Length: 219
Ligand SMILES: C[S@@+](CC[C@H](N)C(=O)[O-])C[C@H]1O[C@@H](n2cnc3c(N)ncnc32)[C@H](O)[C@@H]1O
Image: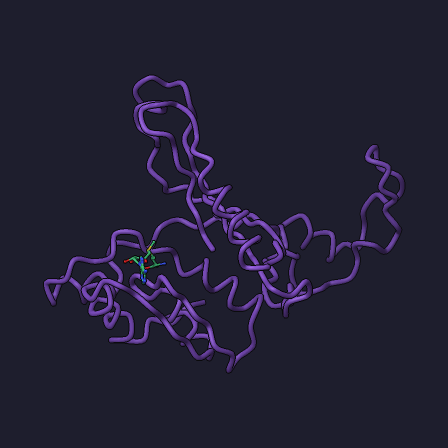
């Protein structure tokens, strides 16, 4: 579940409604909080405008929360499916096989071979950085051509891509109960998962057809 930060009307303080919603979901649904994620969106417009841009007493709100919940304490998950590219320094180290081992100020004891195995990539963190979808993508063009207003709050494909790869296998079913433009269904399809998407607004459903009009492919 992804939930944005929200603010109290006319006051420079945050609403705790999202936190209450999280607790309520966990308690009433008998769910476990497996891990909290941050979606860092560098393209997010500065806001709340009154406090950030006008009075300059708050800083830009640039992230939303993604809460991974499950009724199991050990749901299916594999971080090997979502490895990120090694940093340049790690690539160098793997090549040279040289680094300073021994005790760090943090008390960590780094062994002589701890960093020498190439695992094909780094274990990612729970901060996912992704900007909003490009305004010239095929979905937008399709909506324009049909006179449909595009969904105003589409998420980048990187978000469902990460969780679908991390938490499911090909052939599994991915359900998005608040599908909007069906970013989730499209990415699931690309990753050979089956999908069910539910959306209340008929225009958004009609527009979502554009995602499948021509196969865009994802990396
Ligand atoms: C933030 S949008 C989701 C955007 C989507 N992730 C995307 O990338 O396009 C939330 C969607 O939930 C839909 N919605 C709200 N209440 C709903 C309900 N009770 N049943 C089905 N859809 C609902 C809204 O119409 C809206 O399109």
